[in-house]
Amino acid sequence: MIPACRDCNRSKKDLSLLEWVQKQQKKGILIDPLSSLPDHNSLNTVAKKEISRAKRGSSVVTDDMKRYEYSSLKLDHSRQIGHGTFKTVYKIGNDTAVGVIRDRKHEEALSKEIEIMKKAKHRNVLEILGKVMDKSNLVGVAMPLCESSLRDLIKNGLWKRDPTKIIRTALDICRGLDQLARHGVVHRDLKSANILMYNGTPVIADFGHAKELIGDLHSTSVGTVNYCAPEILAKQRDYGPAVDVWSFAMIMWEMCSGQPPFSGKTETHILKDIERDIRPDWNECIDMPRLYIQLVQVCWRLQPQRRPNIGAVLECLDEIDQQRY
Image (cartoon, rainbow, N blue to C red; front, side, top):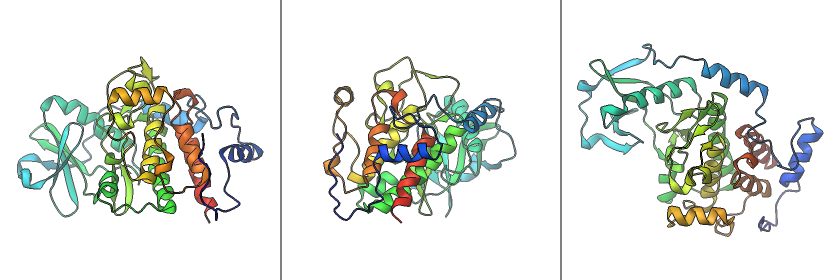
């Protein structure tokens, strides 16, 4: 159920999701009124071409990147600033960080991560500056030094839960996700801790679990439980890009509430809540436009085929942003 609007001064332009869908249909943009927004089987032609082109791309990391020699970096615990999926992150200068694999068995995964980051270059996707080499072995990746993560800002009370800021941040994250989707990439571990702030702009980071989409992805236990889509938690046989839409919905809610989704619950309890159609409580959130709330609610639907694709989510967020001005 959609919570009652508590904002008495809300603009008359504030649309419901149904009204927004009807508006798009009048423009000639065909949207299924039953599912409210286009699902993952209705990717537009441009996106399909982008994915097809991405699949034909080389899987080899080229040598046109800046090379950092591992032996000259002098990395130690005093420079350590964080962890990735299979990397430890160090600060090596005023504006540069490197992520170094903790085990040589992750070299192939690191090579794939670099390939994805290069392919999906975008202002809202963490940039790759170069590769870290130990003689002839690839051991790390260099990237811009970011100020913090979105999770750190929220946890430390530095995140101002302002509706306009939330919508603009969600838009930036969604633009990054749209870029990944256009290149056939599913992140699979999207969470506020993997959204870094670079010069005040959110960028998607940590592609250690990311995969290029070739059909559906075979079931693998990945991701962080609180943000993880039910089809992954339930260890279903196949899943696809809808898992990122679910995780994004959790981040959209988290920005409004100031706390992680399903906080304090075990994986078993989270899965039971989801199956019983229990979702994070909107009563814990600041007032947001009705369309924003409804968008989150269609993005965290139980059935992945009933969630919108990320392109439709981006269109809807852009509409929400325009309504406020």
